[in-house]
Structure formats: structure tokens, C-alpha cells
Image 1 (cartoon, rainbow, N blue to C red):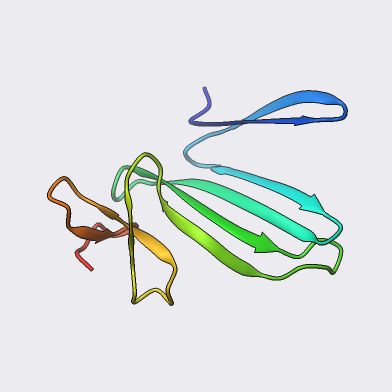
Image 2: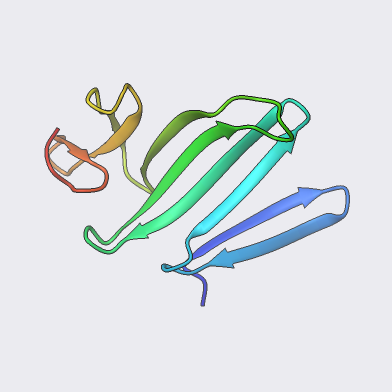
Length: 105
């Protein structure tokens, strides 16, 4: 059974794909100007599902640039130590935590 699930819609209709905790889920949506990639993964240390969204090159065009990341279903917070990218979440007490280690940041 899939742990992650995605769907797309294009000129040939709809398609769906799934991913497991081990395989994760990776999708690319592209144009002739570049692409947007989404990666979903499971972290067994924190028992959380993570996402990373970034721009990437497509056939030599575009840029390699992170857009955002975090934990699926949880509020994000700004993680200044991580080069300005969102890579944290707020716990039940409102404290900013690292998305991968759950340590306070």
C-alpha cells in the first residue's frame, strides 16, 4: 500500500502514482524555461513525512534553487541557520524545531 500518493492531469488525461516510506515520492513539472520538483520522504527517526520543493534545470534551462521544505501537515517556521530556507516546524508549544532532528532552533 502507498504511503505517498500523487496525481497529474495533462493532455493525455489523468495518472496517479504512489510511493512507500522507503522509496519516497518524487515528481517533476517542467516547461522549456525550467522545472519544479517535489520530493516527499519519511524520516523514521522523527516518524514524520517531509517535503522539499525546488526549481531545477530542464534540458539545460532554468536554475537550481530550493523553494521551501518542511513537515507535511505541520506549520513551518523560519530556520535562519539553514541559509534562509524554511526547514522547520512549530511544535504544540509554538517552539521552532528542526524538521529533521526535532531539535529547537
